[in-house]
Length: 436
Image (cartoon, rainbow, N blue to C red):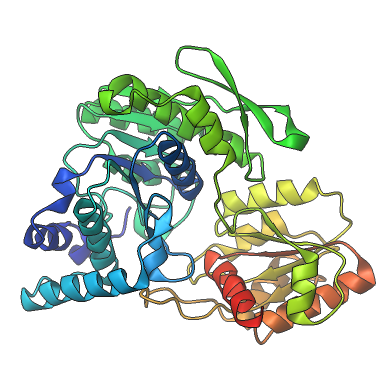
């Protein structure tokens, strides 16, 4: 049974707020993206390809990375702090004066859609916040494309405790007579549910994406089959096998878009190739240079730091697979997680007996007061439930966590990995900014 509070059963607040703003969402051409993992990467690939082809893009991602304003981008650049503050005050004032009662995420969504309309973009790439059917972004009567990325277990309290329930919630962004692109799925039940939902909703076309294939994995060169069965070679700049699925999903979405919408018929294979190769998406299987890290924490380091969000079991499995391929005898994990995450399952996938784990908290997330971090001592208790003899440590802050992890690395070798939450990774980047 999906447990959703009565106040969350409708989208009345966000629709009321948008109506007071003269319905900016009704004038936007939209690609709408839902899914458990890969939404951010797919949106970044799409954005990069569309920018390469000369289109003016708007992109809305959530959660934000460092600050709320960076979730709203035009042609890859965040709205300025000044403009964000002005629009936030304007829309918040309308919300209060009209007793709409919109949440902070609904206000953020309204800012994004209002700003995109105001800037007269060609296309908006909108990432769902959570779920799909009841998400504040699900306000469009029509979209150019609905995209469903990889589905797994996450947010079970809100979306359901099985793949079928979660897939149904994600499918809520599909539109009658619209086109749907479904990323390669691990769970057959997810594919079956999404196909059934698309049929019931009356979608015109449902494309099930085939994964790209490595041609030269060590250089990131992959092959992708387009809708006409021709093959193009792409260089994937983001690490991990999961990017085969994510890049293929974005490319097939673009391929479908250029064949169904005259406005985007100018997109060439060269635009796709250049767009993919120039994509940046921080915090996902990203290496932090050891020299830079040494300067910041003031100790000698000979190994790069690997960072990754890995905030649910499916993402943790992908991270462990990537880590295993680094051929290190042990891993020193620096870990934080949002309250409600299935830490036991994540640790079952991440941890090995020879590893060590440093638990830390992340700072309060601006504009998202409902986000809370697990107490590091609680994380250690979960760790012991999975691996009784693993070496653990509670760090007071991210600097102490890094120093402890690299002290162990300097003595024992291995690999240092920071993961468990994008909010922890945001703290790491802020720590660099302060201490550079």
